[in-house]
Image (cartoon, rainbow, N blue to C red; front, side, top):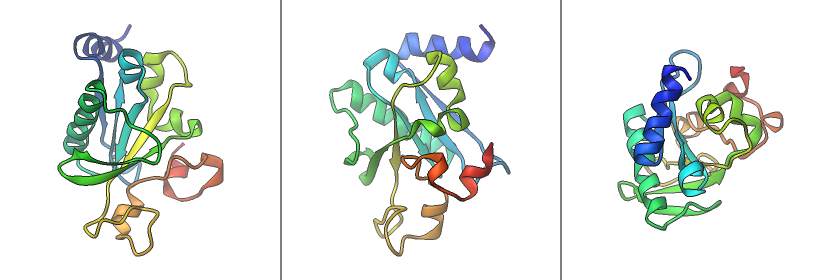
Length: 161
């Protein structure tokens, strides 16, 4: 077991999950973060979020993990107001075709897909989500729509392999 995997295993054992923050640099349109261990510990889908500051996203996913642990699971197509400082977030399932690109450490921990992952989406300043008309461009561009199969979409997120 390498150092990263040992760190993940220790955090999952001690806390129930770990949140992995990924700084995209020049490689992707935005940073992202995802949980590792919610499926193992709580039999709840793992959770991911894109496009905010890494530290903010890690905090949001820890809040989501606590809500799940406290009996408030995330469900597909749900809106939640208890995760992002009073802002509404939308929940959508991640299509497995995206797993290897974004969630490698999670795959290593779980030993293989499939394990479910839910993506949290944050709104723009007007409360619009990436799929809404007239949404601010940063909101749309920084949050890939991972419920769509990788083969069924195009754009900068699909070119990352």
